[in-house]
Image 1 (cartoon, rainbow, N blue to C red):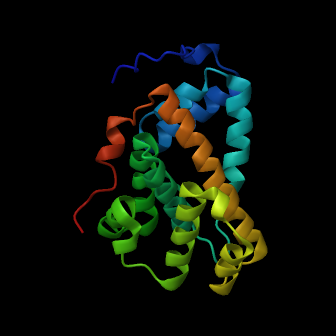
Image 2: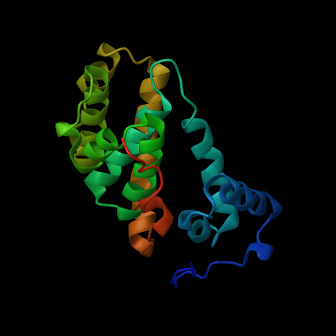
Length: 191
């Protein structure tokens, strides 16, 4: 598939630092393509490297905050912000993490109608509120996450993940980033 015609020029792969070339190769090996977000962020390679170094540890599952929970956060934030790129790409990641296309799609379209447990529902409500009305957040919102079993460290991860996705949504929206076509069909096997 041809690269999109971005406002900010995307460097050729051979112009990138070796760590980003390696990341592109790993993405191609795992997914079969380089995500457009990687190509767009590569406009400023040093900042992309810093962003990715921040991104990776936030996606490490913990006892009460799974990979699926972390992708659910990305999807809910992206839904509130109406970020097509992140909804499509993290919708794929959520389908994979849940191994459930129907629930993943329900979360992406309207988490309130999804078959979620109390903990998942509390996480979604928190990140929805933080994204839509951040000035209305209070200690009660944090305590609501603790009440469903999240540790302080996991609550911090929820806050940081929601905040990071608000940032990446804005970059994707501001630059007109489009999801790779492949994301639309991956992990949509018969269920």
